[in-house]
Length: 190
Image (tube, rainbow, N blue to C red; front, side):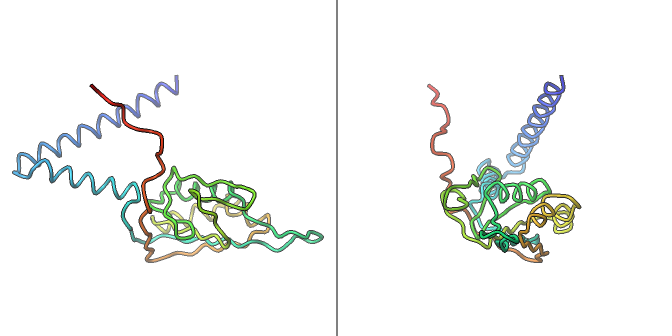
């Protein structure tokens, strides 16, 4: 029952968004602006959301270094792919609007995984230190990362040196190419 209610709310939100978009198009035509102008505005917004243009704004940076070996251990404490993914998800959940990891622009659908050589981000092997830069309300992002017993505390508890800093101005590069959908295509209609 709850799933049906959630699905209904999502559909209502989508209908409202489409109504709003229709009203924008109608207003553009009524004001003598062409439909192409309204569509150009929407295209610019989509390019922003898809990470196809550089962005700048205030936010936070999180830098994670490898930790020293635990007493009696020989190997250093390392960040794993699931930890980096969890840290990125923590920032998205806190309202990050744009993000980069080690200078590579990421989206909420970007793949972060672990392989035998280290952490791979969309096919690129990352090397420590790992630096996440997230644009969003700095106070909200900092508060989310400072939750006692939260994700950042967990990483520190296992011995990973981690620095979180407020950034008055971050500039994130655009994604190199929209190659994350290699198999999905719109259906062909006849």
